[in-house]
Length: 220
Image (cartoon, rainbow, N blue to C red; front, side, top):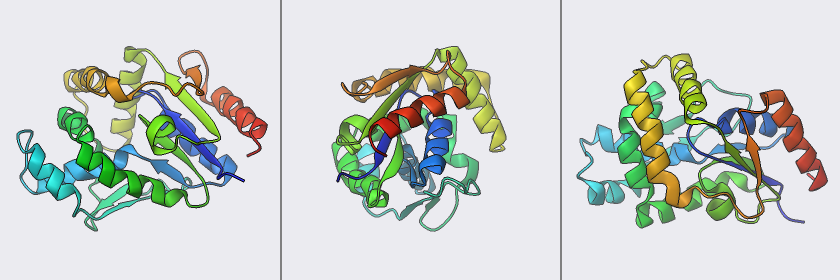
């Protein structure tokens, strides 16, 4: 029997984290936010004084960063630890969006982080990100792809940042959404066997029920 793995992909602010965490709770599975691994590398790079022009240096640094991601869906007290410390709201700083997109496309970084992203799924998982259903877990039992308008996604991201105590600048946030859409486009295609959900047309409770029905149908 294959592992019980559910993937939830989609663009920034589409609602992946909210849906993924609810599904992980309902299915009693680890919750893996694959994007946190890339964000952790960017935080480590910032701490090391590396900038957008230091991609080779960041790629080298990535292999030595200790990354611990919280996979407990019922614990939102912390998300990730980078070299043993919690970066807090810095982990989702919109000002890092451009660098994040660039670094996530570096082949050496992607190869290194892939094994780290897969490790917590030894007994199954709900994984969210950009390419979980196509690259990280291509054999997942259930694959979802979320889509929503840019305006709705920006509003959700603003609420998320405010909830984490981060300052929200509308122009910076708009640039993050636009930049991530453009930069992530090559890796952000729905898997051929993914079920596409328009999150602007359905409430979260409805989406959870839709997803759980698919999971039941897949024997999870």
